[in-house]
Length: 319
Length: 284
Figure 1 (cartoon, chains in turn orange, cyan):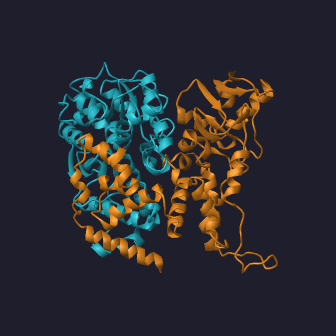
Figure 2 (tube, helix red, strand yellow):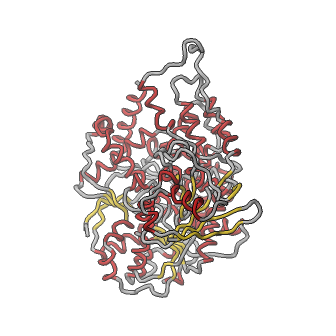
Figure 3 (cartoon, chains in turn brown, orange):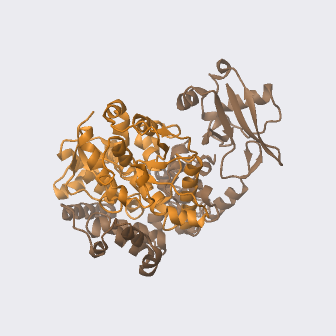
């Protein structure tokens, strides 16, 4: 069984192959395999790990291009996932700067986390003496997001970060912004939501990698959606992102019940951009769209009932 | 193979990807599948409407699922985002939300029971690959295909609950059953960026270009995807994305249904190949 590991010595990148007997590793975790390699074959192999029980989040690595926490990944599960493979490719988390072998630099991600003010800014009714209490129901609302162990698996696989990290943050940062904004003890949710908006909230590409790779089954994608809804409710609704999301909702509830792609482009981009080079024109040129659709599609059968259902849900939600 | 389905085309098949609707309707009778379009289906929310109102989006999809139940048929869609939205709604409804949401559906005298399963064209074909293989009239043995799954065909795995998201095989199974060659393709599980093409245009164009160039590097004759939104992104925006990246590589992008149609010997016109923006006529 071969483990092809990406190495970096501070100057050059290279790959090194370590061979282990399958019978010797079948009962191990991936972290135990890395420790075995370090102890028996190569003391220079660098990686981070601490708790060995999926609490500290230090041992995130990639296997065959997908992020895992090594201590919580059984080799039996990896064999099952990748079939009868002869080799595993182990590499550092993507979308982080590599310091040495499998060790990555967390400082830029921590800097982003600071931007959304992850600590509690308590309501003025609380005091240092009395504390900041919340009931079980209030705690349960944010308990999932508190499970985040900052392992970086979501960030490693995020397609938006890979394309360009300059106008986006690690998905777990948005999860912590959601958690802080939805904490019943929080003074003002916008303390956390506003910096999320100004640091790329609307740039998520919906690839669902964050939700898929989180070892704690947290969906940062859902938290991003939650923050977007919160921001819009609080009046932070300018820009292309909110306009785009709103046009889907408008078509579903207020117009025909189905998406009108001509109007979607116009509503999102504005008339001048759309006519210049926008999607609607591209679609019309390709013969795929009828320009008359701009005047609206046919209302779907039963749409009035759908509107009644939605209004009932919205009324119940306000209660 | 299940023969009859409550068909959920999704908005994109009625407008920007009409060729995908032409193709699925052309292959269905040959495969012995009857697609009964759900009357009054609504937009699934397209992975966008939940940003405005998640409850309204859930209600709309509960209604969509209930409409399929009224037909006593499983639901089939070919759009991966519709698949994910409907599957997630079904999971939420079956795990505690049913009673509450039914109080809202009652406003339109409807009720969600949980009796109709949701499937996709890709999944159906993969589960019946041998049957598909037997119906191939024109094996695509000279065609080199880069298979592009699309995010919402595979992720999140816990919601879709069909196959491994890091090592999926359904698409390769189908393409091989059609006789085509699957080329190694680095970006096969990547994101095309479609859902953020407006707010994050620069990044999305880079992602689109990367996928097209990777397919060209693999010497693929075409990219094929089960998701009409990925097809739209990789096809309609390809010229722009490659111009920005200063790349001359251009690769036709087919819907899965179009590739199946070619293997079944269906005329290119009936498969809507004329509507593909990057010229796909040579593939017929």
